[in-house]
Length: 131
Image (cartoon, rainbow, N blue to C red; front, side, top):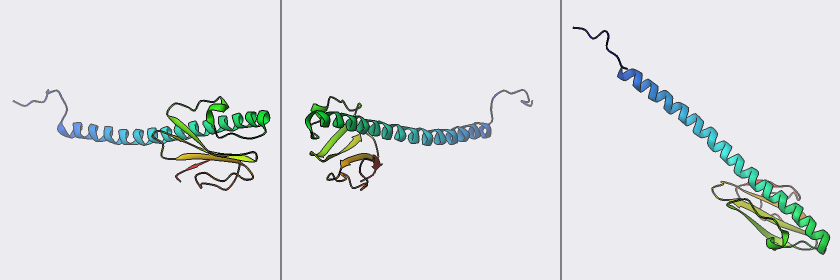
């Protein structure tokens, strides 16, 4: 008796399907990681932009910038941390980091403020990278 009417898949078909599934999983995982990193970067940039706006409002009211984040009435995003490294009448500098991010972002404003992470010498420009 021959089993011509047998149902099911051969081992070659199963291995081929699993290999295809593995390749698709690797491709999807790479795309997900890239999207996740971009989202973290966008969050840090947004936090620094909010900080810049709050610093300008504070400056209009007090004629100086502050290094005390609690005086600025902003709240960083979840799992995000902003560090103001210097603040004076002529400028300020800060950097942001977020849990699980591979990079950090920085911003410095004014003639006397310096780059807190050493990523750029251009003031008033948010730059992200690995310090």
